[in-house]
Image (tube, rainbow, N blue to C red; front, side, top):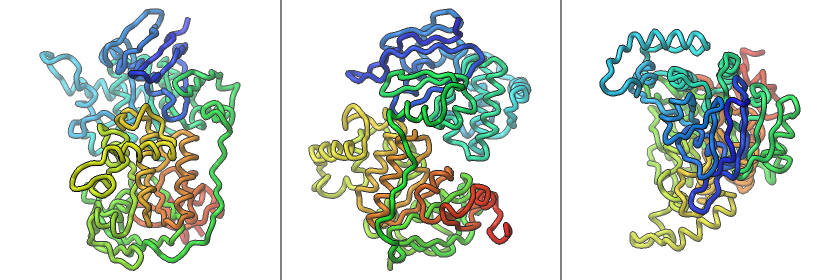
Length: 505
């Protein structure tokens, strides 16, 4: 008998069918990958299992017992834990305080030293080493994810849902994370691994379920499938790497940064005399492990952060002292940030409103302070069709969309504003193969219209697919520049670790 059974689960939001008659059976101590395009219903299904949503129809059984969850607390009490794509930690609290937060009720004594000892023992058992007294804000992303997992295990989770768990990790953290997940599975924890990364599925899953448009379209044992077949099942067609031939040679310099120096949030040097030039109709890719100055570089160019020294020119104009609005208007800079939720979108606003965030003070979006709602709705419908944003209507809140559709809204807003310079950060992070293909094609089309693109990503293979040149960052400096196809992954990996071109020879 299967340990976890989801029986004919359906979920409707008004007239929209997010899930239609989904049935899954998962054996104890196995890893089930749940695949699908962004918006296929994967996270919605997991939210039903975790008690965040109640199913419109269907039932859940755990270890032969019918269960019904009104909240995540009910799910946790029945041994179900979920690690969300966007972490839910209180940064001001310590590791121990985060893990025990909410345990024991208001009137129970809280012995943090005893809890810390138990947490250390649990972390050692699964190879999830943490410092229990360390404040979470000081931890790197990979360590924070360990805290999230320990929080669920400490509450007795026997079923662990991991929703796009590696989308927040640097490349050098992914291998060790997958090994920890395997250890959990081998110790008897049942894993539901929601992802779009097919290579990780092949490494960790015992079985695979593929969803499309809210329906279950296929199930496979991992030994009976391969990456190409899974990709085809996810998207409904063959997906090939994006290869768009250049339509024209690059023009003159459009963006020039000279000797930029800046500090990060913790007062440490983030940029150390960084210089770059991007020409008209050219994509400069910036590769590197996250946290090596890429975010600060993008924010300084866009005007969100001031450099301590150095200069920035857009064409013939010095823009170092200009604010964000002036740069967007005068120099026509577009910015696709890495944080879709915190910076890219107003989540509680509609899709239509998010499309016009750059232009709501100008005609035809508004006149004399009055919003032209009819124009905004018509514009949104056109943008949704052009950029394949899948939703119920332009009035739907951006919060309710999948990550891929949220990314398309931001990309559409910035590209359709007609920028001369486009700064793109982590454009493909957390996206499925179909959405990645679409996003990269739009960026390449912008390049061929003459836009100068700064493409920053920790996903090296995606940088190599679109960039005309690749610069590698390490500890706030460029360690080298290579041409796609002329350098091996090993060579670029050495640059990412801080070994300059001269030191490799």
